[in-house]
Image (cartoon, rainbow, N blue to C red; front, side, top):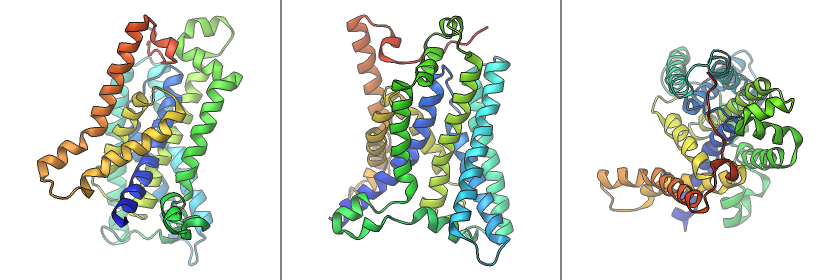
Amino acid sequence: MTQFISLFQAAIMFGSVIMFGALGEILTERSGNLNLGVPGIMYLGGIAGLIGSFFYEASTTSPSPVVGMLIALVCAFGMAALGGLIFSFLTISLRANQNVTGLTLTIFGGGVANFFGGSLNKLAGGVGQISVAATSSAFRTATPLAGMGTAGKLFFSYGFLAYAAIVIAVFLHYFMSRSRKGLNLRAVGENPGTADAAGINVTRNKYLATCMGAGVSGLGGLYYVMDYTKGTWANDGGIESLGWLAVALVIFATWKPLNAIWGSYLFGLLFWMYFYIPGLNRSSQELFKMLPYIVTLVVLVAVSLRNKKENQPPASLGLPYFREER
């Protein structure tokens, strides 16, 4: 039972990181932009939040966990949104290729984060010596219901960002399916020419969706740094691997925020399942790590076959087009 609880908690925590990345990318893709720079943006969010909280705690003898948490959130969201702004300027204003720009942003974000993460480690006195204990504790504080036995450990023993991810998913579902601005955004993503003829500002919607989506994705990197690594920086590629899973989750969830909730937890479960199965060798472990991507491919094939069978274009399922204007 203890092993099951541990696996369940790992699935929820890692699933929440993936969910943030996927929700941000869903919002971006609904505007018609395909941003493959999600891993880099999550890197930027994680390192910016860590730097902000580190210098805050270093500047005072009695740091407030709440103030440190707010500083980390603002820095992470702002830096990630800046990454989205760079992507938007290059692909929307300068009409650069989205795929190349996104992949470049991933490399750029990872390089910048690891450079400043290494510098921060040296400044703090060595790897693992970064002291943001107050801020990290604010992110890792469980709800008061965590002590309710097994149910408390399974559902109420996580930091507030794990529940914030669910709230954001529900909000995005309502925004894109019920609000006028959300429907306008979907119109921009599915047919920008028609949306422009209807008086919708295509460029503004693309910029806002891409920057806000990047900001949401950046919170995933912050949650990873503050919760899983407990406020330290590790150059182990963990954020990048979860970022690519977030991109895969967008396809798995068929661009629907509510599907991203349970899909992210499933990905989190598959991501760590190998660790709890005894007797696996190194080769078998690597095969288990492939499961989330295999599941995504199966779903993608199933959706494509259903489209072909029903003779429906992708837009009828709400899937955005990614046409670059020339």
